[in-house]
Length: 334
Image (cartoon, rainbow, N blue to C red; front, side, top):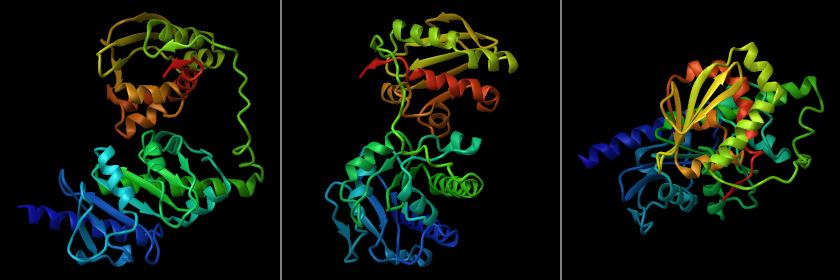
């Protein structure tokens, strides 16, 4: 039974390697992929293998605790990174490759210029990790980046994507490559398109009270900001932003229900009984309130759970995107 499962996962890895190679996201002998075999072992590509011509014999079984391999074939030099991912996340697969457009883009820019709704919804703010060596010698930095997104860009060293299956991870990399391609093409028409990416942030926010996260004061401060925001008011009226939305903290069950009427919050109750309920652990909510994780992206990547249909909620994507931007203006105690 175990042998059958191992054989099936190897087939998945072979197919994932071919797809990366055929789409130009991996070339020659660059890149490495792995999959969780069980609670104690993973499968990872061997050092010096070509993902486009991957064979079952090129895939090595490794014990997660000891990092000892089964057989004499040496695993990828990126084994420390892959193993640390599995020790920190529930991900089933890890992809690491060096897409040419992504590498070129992040060699000169430190942030992704988002130009399409698809990029904002499925990628959000892609964390970028400095990289100065041919292999990842500081995997802890990558782990921290992956806490905010299932996809991280490594400067001059490609990307790392994690997921429940290879399809999810591959889609993230393909979406990022397409987003970078769009930015490059757009820059042909507007030369200074990327010039603002490396400028220091110029936000000049007044000193604010620091609230405990998810406290009544914290949520009320957000409500006050929303009801003072002219953009949300205009878009709320235009799109008839009228609904009840609740946010919920997984660990304690604490919840707040917002009643929206044409963009204005007319009611706030300690209740989770709403048409739409967004729930997540405290660690994820903290990232959202700090502005490091987009709520829509968190839902599409499975970091937050949504009760209700995302397609219906997406009708109000523009005003809610502004709402999430306002979150980070209310300071919280970490």
